[in-house]
Amino acid sequence: MLITTLIIVAVLVFALLVMSTEQINHLNRAAVAMCCGVVVWVVYMLHAGIYIHLVHPDEYAYFLSGTASNTDSVKFFVANNVMLPYVEQACSVILFLIATNTIVEVLHNNGVFDSLVNWLRMRNSRLFLWIISLLTFAISANVDNLTTVVLMLGIVSQIVRSHSQRIVYGSVILISAMLGGCFTVIGDMTSLMLWVRGNVTPTHYSLGLILPALTSLCVFNMLVSTRLKGSVEVVSRFNKFEGDDSYLAWWQKALLLVVGIGGLWFIPTFHFVTKLPAFLGALCVLSVVWIIEGFCNLERNGNVLFVQRHYFRNTEFVGMRMILYFLGISLGVGALTECGALMWLGNQLDYNFHNIYIYGVITGVISSVLDNVPVMMTGMNMFPVDSVAESDFAVNGAYWQLLPYCCAMGGSLFFVASLAGQAVLQVENMKLMWMLKHYTWRVVCAWGAGLLVFWLTH
Image (tube, rainbow, N blue to C red; front, side):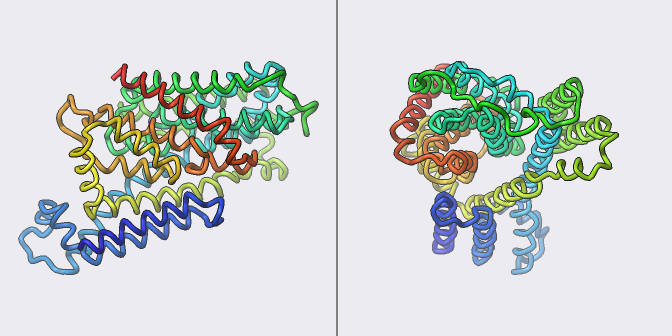
């Protein structure tokens, strides 16, 4: 059994290394994650009988109901009672992501964000930095980090001509998106997983992280603004349609924006009132946005060019890749949890350190070089939810808020450990030495300031 557990750990660590070096090996991280998720469960089945007697003895005894245990009963129990809950949790997050990504794409395809290009054209470089940062933070609090980063980089590329200025603003966009994503339960797939698992409640979670997140954002922006000299080198003219090729009137765009973003904020209330899964609320908001969009474009729905313009590229490709990646990671971390490796690691950390801030910093440092989503999920599964209300591991305990914050800051250090960071690298073609010299140390300072505020407020 020990050898089997070591093989599961080795497969997952190897997969993490491959996914984190995607820029070098050019292997699709979604394919690697899915392969890892399948392989570790196949290996787990080699000693499944021993594992379930150690981890799920009572559940398995109830499942047998007095009958004798055999190979078939073990396999059936693992498939339906051990592995399936991880698939269910992942699918809840996936359906939520599909809905929210599609909402953003509906808004984008109807030109709701086009007017931002006109509004953001300004010469004051420091004012532009703060506006871009706060806007990214606000959008990422409602939508996943990758979608937010791609959207904001596209807007900045239509405004800023200088590449040296764009890489500065690109770094600001990344850290603003990561902080905005960790600040709410609907802003990132990992914080959403905390909510789905019942570790946190939306209001308490956001109230506990708003001050640390905003402190980190402000410290980072102040440190970066010292590098900005002169004015923004604004693009002289737009490439097409003066930045807006949509057909909708301004009030129709405003209606879509209010319903879309307001609907996302309504989802926690929907869950609280109905007790139904959060993804149902997201699907409900998507359906309302889509119906309104259909009425607004009623006269153009049969136009061929209009139909081609509304092809949902993000939902069809980028979103699907992210979905399969998350499903593979959920399966991989699930197998690591069920073989007892994470329980052992959590016990070792508790015995040697017994300090959640050390756990958070260690997890954040690891997430700076390894893929931050599986690292975050590993930290999430190391400790069970404590029934003692005053515990740091109880529902809404400090650990469940500290963990996503540290992973967000750690994942921002070198760009390579997150999908959003890799998107910035690809779009702006940043160099490693530039990051180390001008960016990484500022992130560390901002991270420390946020940790101090977190400690003072908890």
